Length: 117
Image (cartoon, rainbow, N blue to C red; front, side, top):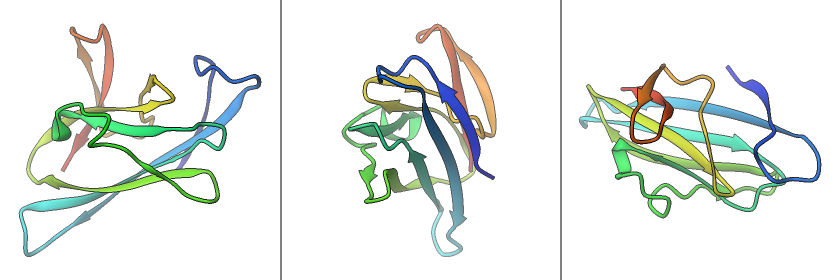
């Protein structure tokens, strides 16, 4: 399910629609889940997904921008675990509204989304 939200913190001249989605594909022959992260942010120049599964690395979580303005990336994530994560869109940390749950993070002083695989 895709959720449409409006984000005001991003430094654009107008309000932009950001549509996010997560797709999980469990691999029967390996202990991983292929997780596809998608962020439709046409006005953005960069987007990444950062979290426990990639040591909160913007570089490792870089998403590729498609011609339609959607940023997308597929990552192998170890199964049977839960990971805190966020998107970084043009330097602004953003939660995925369809995360499996949310968890308060003292370091960030904010909630992080939780991905359960």
